[in-house]
Structure formats: structure tokens, C-alpha cells
Amino acid sequence: MKYLLEIRNLTKRYGNLLAVDNLTLNVPEKSVFGILGPNGSGKTTTLSIILGAVFQDSGDFSWNIGDGLKDNEIRKKIGSLLEKPNFLPYLSAVSNLKMVAKIKDAPEDAIEDALKAVGLYERRNSPFKTFSLGMKQRLAIASVLLSEPEVLVLDEPANGLDPQGIVEIRELIKKLSLEGKTIIIASHILDEVEKVCTDVAILKQGVLKEIYEIGSNKNDYSYFEIGSDDMDTLESFLKVQPGIMEMINKGDFFMVQAVADISIGELSKKLSDAGIIANHLQKSKKSLESVFLRVTGGDK
Ligand code: ADP
Ligand code: MG
Image 1: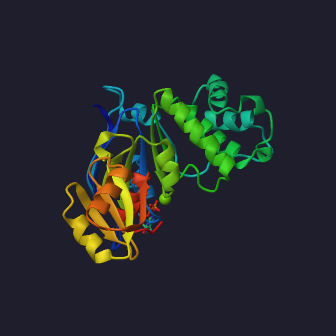
Image 2 (image 1 turned 45 degrees about the vertical axis):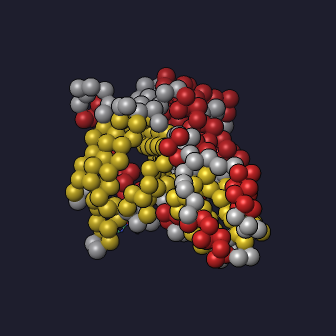
Image 3 (image 1 turned 90 degrees about the vertical axis):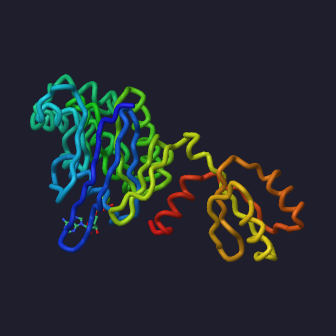
């Protein structure tokens, strides 16, 4: 597999605060790569470093884009949205993009393509201020597309959007991914990441806690909640079950992670064979959620 971005032992301190702590990760080409973590976990700092906006204290990274291209040419293939662009409210979408194209030295004919790509071509002559939040964010993404990047780096692309806007951005990211772009997204919203990403790196306090491939067999664990009036007997039973990776006592029930895909039926039969009456038995589909909660301890 080709990695479009390789990050090796990246570390960044702000005074005493370790914002990014010895981070090593690889972003596969054409993936939608999510960097997921609670606020303050070092996502924006990491993106700022790989975009050259902030210098790391140690470690390094490399973009494997366009063999033999010079640094400034590589830079053009990386489109980024770290901060919201300042569009002028009374100007149309087209006029705003014309200004951006001038600054970025992008060809004006890229504007039409970019507007079409984000689904704003029909509204190209409407003033920016008449746009919904989702449309504003889509225009921001259009401004990134002007230089026809191979990779998009988006920091919290759904932040502040209403549900409709979130859906619009999600659909747009999926579409751009299908067109072959690699997309790196930082987000603190599990749901957002889970719905669009192919790979997820979970950060907490600057430390990489886990890499999670959505839909891959590697993560084909089952997650269960199991409760019984007799939690001690249940605990002894669970402890000797093969394939149980982890169990967390939640008071009234255990949260259990099993290696294989086990059905509720099988589990419930095993329990009754052991004479245990479960008063709570539920399979959790959201395995990324379980991982996220486990590694972050539940803070968002
Ligand atoms: P995230 O994007 O995951 O919310 P950040 O990368 O913005 O996290 O921040 C990581 C940590 O570094 C936080 O504790 C934040 O307060 C701190 N931090 C970020 N930027 C600066 C800065 N310029 N000066 C001092 N501390 C900073
Ligand atoms: Mg941030």
C-alpha cells in the first residue's frame, strides 16, 4: 500500500504542555483518514505541522506526492482548510472565488469546476450572505479545490453546521473521495468520522491511542452489554470465556469486547447453560464508539 503521508515520531510542546507526543502514523493514498479526539488532543497542531504552518520540536513527516516534484509544487497539491476563509458577504460565490483564485494563482476556469464539484454552480451568482451554513462551508471547500489538490486537509469541517449542513459536507467528502482524492479530516465528533472515514486515528492528549480501520476484518470484534442480578457469578463466567478481550464493569452490567463475531443467541445460550440469568443483554453495533470511549475515557 502506498502512503501519501508518513508521520514519524512527531513531537510538539507549547511550554510545558506536550501538544503532540511522539506521533507516528501513515495515511494511505486515497483514504478518508480521520484524526479523532477530544478537544485539546493535538489534532489542529498536527495538521498545522504537516501543512508547514507550525514547526515541530522533533520528528518528521513526508508527503509522497508527485515523484520528483519540488517542495512548492508539492505544496500546491495539498489543499487545506484550517480556518474558515473570509468571504465577502455581499459578493457572489463566483466573485469571492475569483479573489481566492487570484491570491492562489489558480486559473479562473477552475472556478466553474470547483463550484460544480461542491454543488453550488446554480447558485454561483448569489451573494455569499444568502447562503446556508452548509453552502458556506461547501464554498470554502470549493476555494480549496481551485488549485486542484490531490489531498484535502480539513480541520473540523462540520463544526458549527446544522444537521442539514453536516449531511451536505458528508456527501461532498464522499464524492471527492470517489473522485480519487485523499482526504484527511480532524474532528472531535465520532459520528462524523465514522460516517465518512475509511481509517481513524484516535488521539488523546497528543498521544496516538489506536488506529481503527472502518469495515475491516481486523476490527471485527463484537461488543456486548451484559448484566445480571448476580454480577459476581457473571464476572467469573465471563473471565473464563475464550475470545473475550476486555470487560469493563459499568455497575449494573459489563461492557464486553469479544474477538469474533458472536450472536446474541449464542451468548444467551451459553449464559443459560451456565445457569446465569441475564437481565440485560445487548449487542452494540457501534464498535468505533466503544473504542473511542475506551481510549478517551469518555470525554469529548
Ligand atoms: P485539538 O485541535 O485536538 O483541539 P490543539 O492541537 O488545538 O487540539 O491543541 C492541543 C493542545 O495544545 C491544547 O492543550 C491547546 O491548548 C494547546 N495549544 C494549541 N495551540 C497552542 C498555542 N499556540 N500556544 C499554547 N498552547 C497551544
Ligand atoms: Mg482543533
